[in-house]
Length: 426
Image (cartoon, rainbow, N blue to C red):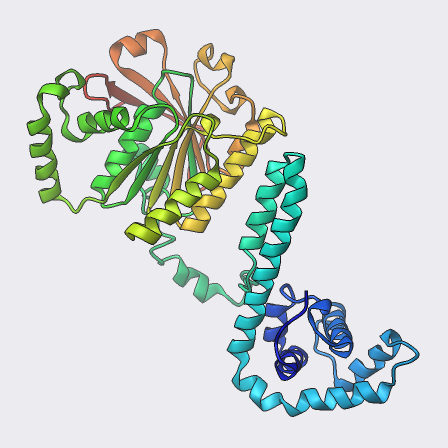
């Protein structure tokens, strides 16, 4: 596939590439030599990019012609290349004036070409049901762009990086329901992070996630709660009790009281929105979540500050890899989702069978995959024996914390009537 740009636009691209380092750096991942219509332009592009990759500097015209000698065929005249190079230089002023137009044109062409290529490649992969490879190809194609991030220069960026530390996006903006944990995190978690709660079945993973959702909404955050196990109505009923402190057994006869207390809460604080979305168990992928989030933003102008997935093992895999690898891949994709949407992602995961036998659940008791915690910024377990269950108590053990202290424990109480989870004094 070659450019359908005019000859002078293709010349302008080449002139900027050989004379503007920033332009070359931004476009080199987006341009292939055979995109250019004319063989001379193809060789110019190859020489310019090869020279920069080798010497980290832009080539002179003499250097370009010297290298072209090695690439041209015997039937081609070097004088023709010299004349074409002169023609490139004659469009220089117009090229500089239209720099942004050229950048946009190159980027749009690269995106179109990448998506078409991914679709064509996917046809063959579809026949062999290699769904994960299709997903990767399409995702890579969609993310094609000229965004350039050269990272942080440690020695020269001291002022700017400390100024960024005061940026709202980097300040811990998402408190947990537990003061002890918030203190260790200097306030809470940040956007673009992934947090995970670990527990055996029935010990309180979903209850914690529901409490986290309620606390964040009351803190003014927009929250998406994704349920892969319970219906939207059942999750909503849990939220009813947590918001209003009305016992689960009394909810059916207290609808007016629920609305009254919710109105009062709304008058006392600027609440965020709460969307509860049910997906079929083991049918939804991270891409389905991504599509839903994009839909809510595009059509309803809702940008979520927090996305809660209840829980990781119930997301779909393509079945082409072992379960431990699949779970690690899902965790990686959830971290990507957090970064793409500049939100905090919370999820939960099951322990293995040993999780019910030990007094303190650590990473050794993670079901199927230790690797799923590698990309997490915070991981903690909920620990509870039979006596603690009867007494409505549990212990939280911090397994991993990128931004604070780890390997410590604190006590929580669980009111099984209202489903409220709160920290208790030791």
